[in-house]
Each structure stands twice: as structure tokens, then as C-alpha cells.
Amino acid sequence: QVQLVESGGGLVQAGGSLRLSCAASGMIFSINAMAWYRQAPGKERELVAGIISGGSANYADSVKGRFTISRDNAKNTVFLQMNSLKSEDTAVYYCNAEVFTSMISTWPMNYWGKGTLVTVSS
Image (cartoon, rainbow, N blue to C red; front, side):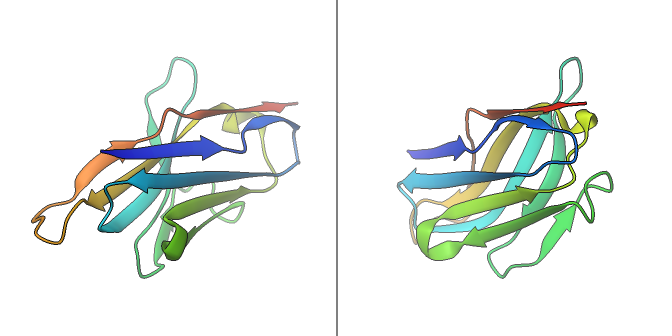
């Protein structure tokens, strides 16, 4: 099994910054893509940013220029630096990872963290 544990959420004023971290542990041979999703109250879960093992990243239009995703492959950890936060960024942020659990795995398994709450006050 693989566990993803997020940290770094909290309460911040609009215009402020937070840095989220997500550490993966367990039966990991390698990790393909890692990503951050978020779900605001009454809304569907949406992709915020994703990054592949080589470092290429993509972002939702709503966070481009404000958020930066990065990863430490040696530590199986992904980060989300969030700057210029807005009230509409308030949500539970979830970490996602595509994990190869052995060297003979054909397809990666998809895992989710339990989420960390980010609240931005206006």
C-alpha cells in the first residue's frame, strides 16, 4: 500500500502565502505524475497543478502565475507554493500520485491523500 500525507494548510489572509507538502510512503518503486487537486464547498474536485517526474508542470488557469508546483523525487514529495491567495482559493487540497509499486508493474496505481484545508479570509 501507498500512503500520501499532506501538510501545510491553514488560515491565511487574502494576499498571503502558504506552502503545501505531500509525502508519499509505502510500496513505491517509482512515481510518475504527482498533482494537487482542490474541492471547495458545494463544488466538484478540480485539478490545481500537476507535475511529472521529469519536472514538466501544468496549472489550472485560475492559479497560473500565483501557484508553483515542485517535487523532490528522492523524497517522493510534492510541494505547492501558493502566493497572492484569494478567497476563492479556499478549499480542501488533495494530493494525488500515480505510483508504480514494483518494477514489473505495467500500469501505475492512483492514490489520494486525505486532504488539507486552506482557508483564505478576505
